[in-house]
Image 1 (cartoon, rainbow, N blue to C red):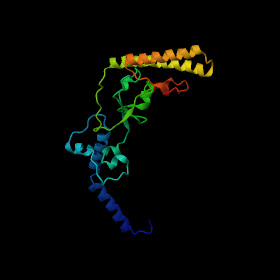
Image 2 (cartoon, helix red, strand yellow):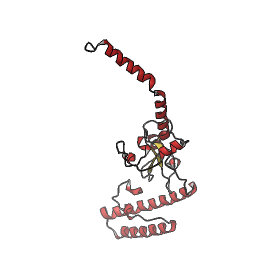
Image 3 (tube, helix red, strand yellow):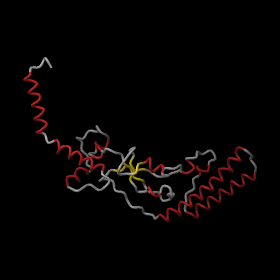
Image 4 (cartoon, helix red, strand yellow):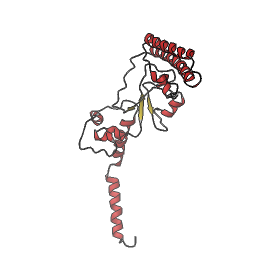
Length: 225
């Protein structure tokens, strides 16, 4: 500080004070908050033509993908402050996952507005063999379609699939026994009978047979794919 004369220090202080009182910091902060709410608010937040214009997906070659690939296409959601997904419905959904279908989940560790993925998993979602897919959700852009099947239809189909899983488990056991324990003709006959039974079951219940799931060496996860 000894190197600067007192009048230079005084000028610097005056410049800082002028910048502080002249620049509308409150308006800037308010605008930034509005943009943040537009991206992260769980409700529909598009109230003005300006907001609609902000959320439109338009390709703009002037945008450089500095903050993610979405910027390249002019998506404001590239600047979102939290990661959200929604659960895509499955026609043969089980009772554990059914409450989360078409629901928005947050991938953040904590969230005041949405159920987090960790909380959903603790309640049974994404269990072993779960078929559900999580789709990226962008507030103001993503439209979640209604289910085209009822809960009753889901329960009926799920029970049919469980019946198929039971038959597949039986044929896997016989195949393992035939390959590794006793290659008896009786066991081979059982395998053939079960194979015919699975064909008939799939035909009756309009299910697709999956030969790969009948492999006795299949992993536990792939048994339910």
